[in-house]
Image (cartoon, rainbow, N blue to C red; front, side, top):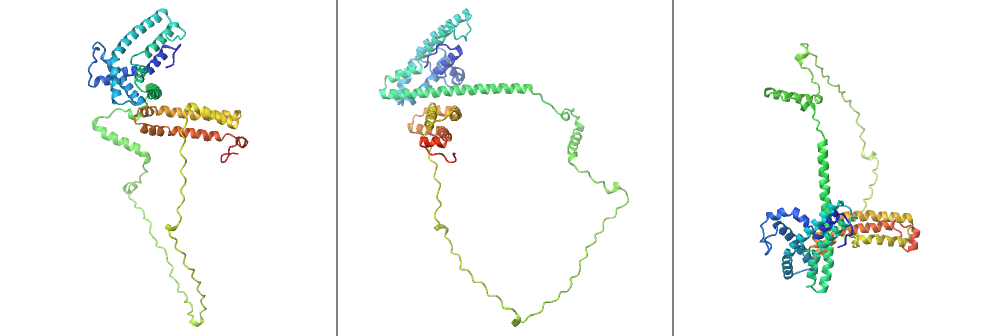
Length: 418
């Protein structure tokens, strides 16, 4: 863990929460759930300890056990031994917390009496408080690194080395997931408060027709029928008056006159010609031979389009800039091309970070899988969008050099590049 030299109390508190693996969040967010579940027996010698403190640390120990099992590939016997060791350290953790609280209270009282602002990073008292807070966190009996050091002393060196590397990776994933959840929670709280403020500022405007007094019960039906008629009036065509309303004089109805059809005139019959006087009929055209029937099964099968080649695994996001610099050096980019290359890198790397943050929980859950083959396959599926983004980075960078730069570098120009 990096050492904090001068940070504010709030930032050092966040570092403490991250190093503890969300222990402070457990106290506030899960104690109610744990208290609702069937309680466990109090460990021996801890009858005087607050039960909520014990339950919060038991939840944290279960999280650490799962992480150690995934990192070091522990079997059932090793897990039982590790669980017992952590239970034995629980009383030491209680004494450590009590002593740390007294020391922190004393330092906070000194800061308050000296009149120093709590966020003054240049104050020696604030710096001392932050340093003591970090030191106490690293020296906790149930600190992850303390447990990992105890475990590695009982494992083969090769297994201990590989397990420590994987443990660091899991801790990084966990901290990233916590930061993402905290950011999402703050965004939801901000959005909720803004919506509530906007709802208070809005004033409902009720139309006048809905603000009329309710009529008495005996005329409710009449009022509703009148309202319906008023609403439908613009869409109803004017009706014609009835016959009795137009007067007693009847109107003459129009007479129907059938149209006159002329009689057909007889037509002269054409003269009948004898066979000998008839002209010779032209000879019929020869019938073309029938076209051969084509057997659809005999046609050659259509060639299938080749599947696109699989994407190459993308390197870590920190190495994308090295790739951009190597491409710029290869083609000897000028200032404008270098600026475009860095803009492309910034765009794609931002999208990659956003994807990692959105799937942080899936990454963390996959890293805790004990089956190595299944974990590798799941990570390959999760990293496929990152592979596609890196492939897009390579294609967009290859479109920047000119023909002369490609000829000088010994590379073929892409299709459509001039």
